[in-house]
Image (cartoon, rainbow, N blue to C red; front, side, top):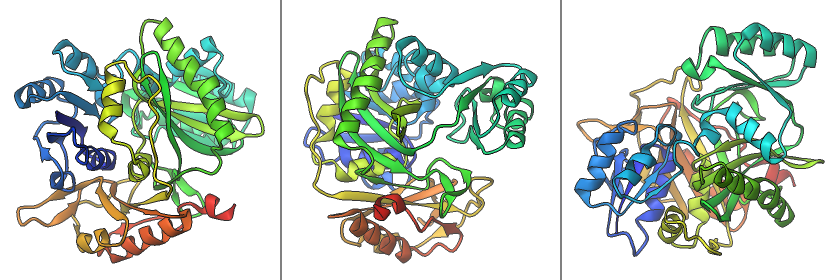
Length: 424
């Protein structure tokens, strides 16, 4: 089978890295890909938002499965266009992708179907939003309704910060059209975790959990980012928590979306807060998390392709993924200036030396190659340095050993990934 992966980040590199190992994979393409992905797949010069171009490329290459990485093309209807062309795709329809594309839709859906989540209110008027904040007090959470590349959520410890967040999102439009509406939520106490389930429209199968590190600095300090590192398995997600999440969050979501006429296929990513009250849903994503995908793929022992195809074709049944009896950890290396304006165009050296560390692999997230073949930084989060080990501690030691072999003075990373797990 010929397979096309859509995207150009660390998530897509990890997916390509896993897919190309499958005996079912006859040829692998990625649109548009990156220099790391080019080592395992043929990269096609088609942008992720060029829906017609992706469909045309899939037809031209005789692709039998398209795996959509990022949320943007899912919300824009890429899988709908592929379905119309008779090409199987892993990922939800545009209607089902609203679970991520609109936080307001997601919260209203949870309310309709009794899914445990934070109390909330929706606003299209900034002054009304501010009045609600003053009435509720702080801490409180302010979210841009639409897609904001992982940066549209502001956790506000005090009222002044919350009022400023409304101005940033709704008045200054820091996140563009995503800020036309805000969702204001109750602040939840507990420990965060990322939970994944494969879905085929009627059935869901648990697909692992991980813990991400959203804050840019050590000790969970500084602004939120798209993720500075992750590890799996997540000790906080016990077998009992898995059962509860599947029963109270995932199953009602799959049933509810089907009942409302928009069956959900692909991967459902539930961002959880796990506290004394049990797991509560923070948000849904409709694609693999990044960097969580990198540790999931590092731990996955099963052939990924049959699982993706079964989800896409509505025949998951009781398929259960098999995992290596090991931990995996990824450290994100970002360009200086991130999550603000990252420094681009700087050269990254010694990547082969990092890849040579036992059980380590460097995933490219924001790189490009120049005419001389040099690898240059071309984004905020630039590399994901992943490693597997018998324990989280061993995986972390290997990952940071690989990080330290990379010669990139203009990059930085957190040095405390998995601190929660190692404190237990």
